Image (tube, rainbow, N blue to C red; front, side, top):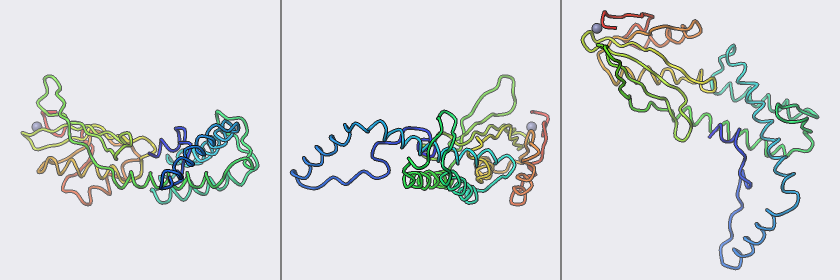
Length: 242
Ligand SMILES: [Zn+2]
């Protein structure tokens, strides 16, 4: 939903479709008025203005996202900074956004911009709150004495927010996280914790390790192992079967 709101053309009547009146007479008038409104000659210009407004909200989002590598902002703080960036863009006379010639802010419907920010920002926090792990799908690797699994972290109609791949040795009761990846949009949202917790729940009694840890993720594993029975340290071969 977040991506759809920011990247796909907005429905003509977004954010609020006017309520259809009750009664046949009212309904006929409504259909006639709606049809007339849609065929107005300024339609294209109006659509362009809406798309330009959307481009500005998206630009503010991407500016905030670009800082995530260094800032690691949690969802609430991310939303605040995104809002501040949007306010800054809307306070300018013109804004340049890739794919657009200069956008004159005075031509825009800033209320639409703020509605769009509110909806996309709410959709983002709802996706994070609703995110769950899909069932583990087994994968086979020839000549392997271990079992491979994969699952995604998903939230309703969003594309998967992240992917996880892991391997277990039942003989030695050992688990190994091979790969965990989230697109930048969904990093620093607590979803890594959701993923690791699921692995522990799905395969109780295993001792878990990771195959490698990026330096920026070390802090994550340090925090996670406080509440886990497993070490979650780096180990390429936690037992001789890997
Ligand atoms: Zn083993």
